[in-house]
Length: 255
Ligand code: ADP
Ligand code: MG
Image (cartoon, rainbow, N blue to C red):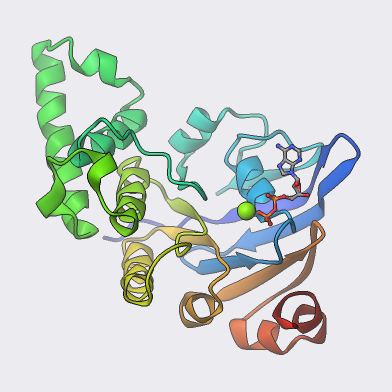
């Protein structure tokens, strides 16, 4: 696939919750096609950052854009349509739906109508549903879940639910994918598979912003690492430079 990779630029994002400053003028650039990791201690503001660029929080000040399109002020649905999809730190699947249906929901979000419209069954809708089903099945194969297509999502083991969340996010057709702690709770083997999957996603032409605690995964997979501490960016460079940065060692890698 030769589609252009997306660039995400966040400039001076500040987010306050009452008296608490969760993000203090944080800037970050995800270069087109790169795998960019965002790390930092608990409470550093990583999830706030993700929630802000994906439109779940409004920044107190600052702005972000995807390929020059202003995201600040748009709803999370509008942002998804611009080309930014995300997963959540705590998986948010539809447990009663099948694995395949969960991915179809992601695809329908791209088309801009809900699952309710899909059951109206006009001929055009039926054709669309066939296409949706086929796309969803392809994405399930991409993440290695094709054997589980018709199982209820809530019966999937935890590690597979995380993969399903990634498939659903990809179904929205993003040019940039945000992953909030995708390795949390996974086994070593599952983390190896996740690493391969992240590379494959980047290979599809999707830029990746990865929020993660798992240092080995970050060092293995990231092109650039940005470090947040108390809401501020204290470093942004290649993994080896960041890992050797005394400030980062003190704030994050230190004991
Ligand atoms: P991280 O993901 O790096 O662990 P968070 O972004 O979740 O950090 O949190 C950063 C700070 O902002 C924390 O002090 C947290 O308690 C606070 N915070 C996050 N979300 C909210 C919210 N919705 N309301 C109030 N405070 C919040
Ligand atoms: Mg978090």
